Length: 196
Image (cartoon, rainbow, N blue to C red):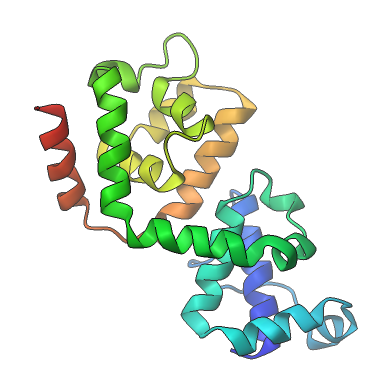
């Protein structure tokens, strides 16, 4: 991938993760970017370095890992990615490589403490599953898998009208297509945990 293409992917993914309307896949990563404006950027060396260091898929993964790991994608500055992007990417890669184990471990802990029907109950505010995510006890990947299994996101969107849930909801929706998983296997794992 050429340095300018890395820059285009950066802009497209930033829009994808921060805007409800923009979709990286639907718009085929099209953004307003010109080679002239790119060449005037003082940080273009970062895009050049990244283009040499990673292959095309790794570049997208590197950027996705950084956008999904921040609380405010709109404010994520390229300088932050330059400074801590490598560490965040390595941590993200570890989660991807042990996703089944991570999901099982986090699910066992969650469902050993709480009954299934209470985990997604938002009648008294934030449900347990959201609190566990916000406290770091459940990863964003586990939360996305739960949403793919239980489809709770749309229900929460109607019941939880607060900025915290709105931010998490957007993150789930935007990250979901980047997390290709075999949902049948995760349902089976969850069934075994709940029926123990």
